[in-house]
Amino acid sequence: MARGHLRRLVLAGLAVAAVAAAGGATAGGAQGSSVTVLGAGSTWDAIATAQWAADVHNLYGITINYQAVGSTAGRQFYIENQVDFGDSDIPFLPAELQQLNGEHKTFQYLPTVAGGTALMYNLLTPAGKRINSLQLDSKALIGIFTGTITSWRDPLILSENPSIKNLIPNTKIIPVVRADGSGTSAMFSDYLRQLQPAAWTTFCHNYEITPCGETSFWPLTIPGAVAQKGSDGVANYVVQQTNTITYVETGYALERNFPVVLVKNASGHYVFPSSQNDATALIHARIQSDLISDLSGVHTASAPTAYPIAGYSYMITPTKLQDGFTTAKGAVLGRFILYNACAGQRKAAQLGYSPLTPVLVQGVFAAVRRIPGAPTPPPLSQCANPTLHGGGLGGGPQGNKGPTVTGSNPGGNTSSGRTSGTSGTSGTSGTSGTSGTSGTSGTSGKHTGQKSSSPGQTNPNGQSSGIPVAYGLTLSDNQLAGRETQVLNHLAAVQPSSSVPLLWIAIDVLIFALVPWLFWHQRRARTTLREYDSHQTGGGD
Image (cartoon, rainbow, N blue to C red; front, side):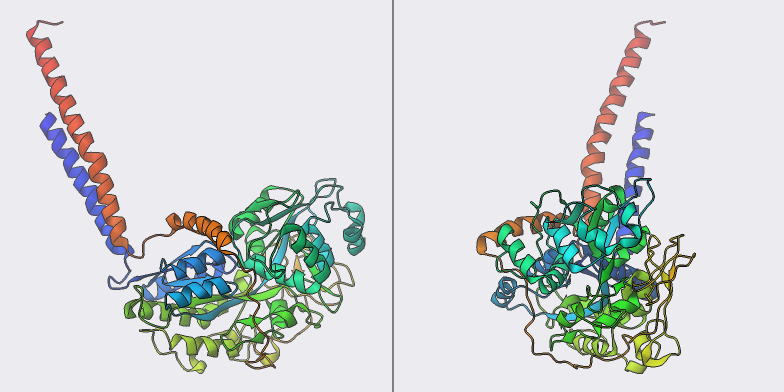
C-alpha cells in the first residue's frame, strides 16, 4: 500500500512538472514563435504602456514584458543590457552618455505619449468632507515641496482659495516625493526651476543639488516630507493619508478618483490637467532633432486653457543588432511601437494622457525604420491616431481645431468664476475634462470648456529650436556608485526575457522540494509498517 501511495505521489509530481512546462511554453508567446521583448523604466507613462502591451498581446499574440521601475533605473537597465528597450521621461544624463559611448551601444528616443504631471492631494475640511477645488500657483507649489510652506492655512494658500478659505484645515502639509530616481521629479523640478528661479536656487544651495537644475532625485531630508517609490507608491500614500500632496501623472489620480490641484498658468487661469489642456500647452514645446522636446514654452504658455506642467515620455531603443537584440525582437518591438503611435493613441485621453501630434508620429515612424527587423510603417493615412484625421483628441469632425471635450475632474474638483473650469459635486470618475473660462457650477462632476488649439496642429516651430536640451543633475563618480546600488536592488524585479528559465526554475524547485519529501515519506511509511507488524506479532490489543 505504501508503494502504491508513493507511486501516486511521483505521478502527481510529474504532472505538476508537465503543467509548468505547458505554462512556460504558453508564456513564451501566444503564437508559439514570438519572442518576449523586455522593457523597463518610467512609471509616468506606465498606465498607457501596460494597456498597449495587453492590447498587442490580444491582437497579435506578441509579448511585451514592461517593468515600471522609474526612469533612472530604466536608463541604467538599458545601459547594462538588462532590457531590450528603456523608457524615460528625460534623456540620458551626460555621465550615462559616456557609459553608452564607452560600450559603443546604440540608442534613439521615441516619444510614447503626452500628459500632465498633476498635483494629487488628500485634504479634508474640519467637518471631515473632502476638499476638491484647491488652487495653487508655482510660488505655493515650490514652497510646499521645498519645505518653506508647511501649513495648509499658509497665507499664500488661503489667498489663492477665497471661496474655500474657511474650510481649509489648520494642519501640517505632508509633501510626498519620489524616493527613487524619477523622470516625474525631473519634469516637476524643471517647471519649478523655470518659474521660481530664486527660490529654486536657494533650495539647491540648502540641499546640495549640484549643478542647480532639474533633478531626478528629490532631496529626502525635507522636514515633514515622506518619500515613496514609484508613481503607484506616492499615489497610494496620498489615498491612505490625509493632509498629503504629491506630484504624479494625471492618470494615477484618475484611477483612484482623487482630486488634483488646479494650477495657475501664465494667463492667470487655474487649469485642470485634462488631455485637451495638456495638448494646448504642448503646442509650445520645441521639438529637437532627436525628438526630445524642450518644454520651456509649455511652462509659460499663455493660452487660457494651457496646463503648464505637461510633457512627454520617451522609449529608448537600439538601432543595431547588438547585446542580445535580434531581428526577431526588432519585429516584435517595431509592431508594438507602431500600435502605440497609431491605434493606441485613441485610448490616450481615457487613460489620462494626450495623443502624439502628427509631427511626432512621423518622427516615430522614422525611428521604427532604424530598428533592425521592425516592420515598415504604414502610410500616415492608415495610422489610426486621432490627431491625424482632423479629429483632435476624440476623432470627431471638428478638424484641426479639435473638439470641445467634456469629462470629470477626479474627485469632483470645483472652481470659482475666475478659474479655468467648473465641476459638480458628485465627482464621478472621468478622464479628459477640459476647463472653460466662465466657472459656473454643475452637478454631474463634469468640466465644460471652450474650444482650444488641438494637438492635431503641428508645432509652429517645426523640428526646431536649437535650444540645448536640459539633461538635469550631473552626478559625481561617488554619487553614481551610490545610485548604482539602488538600481541593482531593482534587478530582481525584472523577469527573464524568456519563459524557459522560469520553466527550469520551477522544475528545479519541484525536484529539490518534492524528491527529498518523497524519500522521507517512503522511509516513514516503511517504519510505520514495521511498527505495525511488530505490534501485531507482539500480541497487542
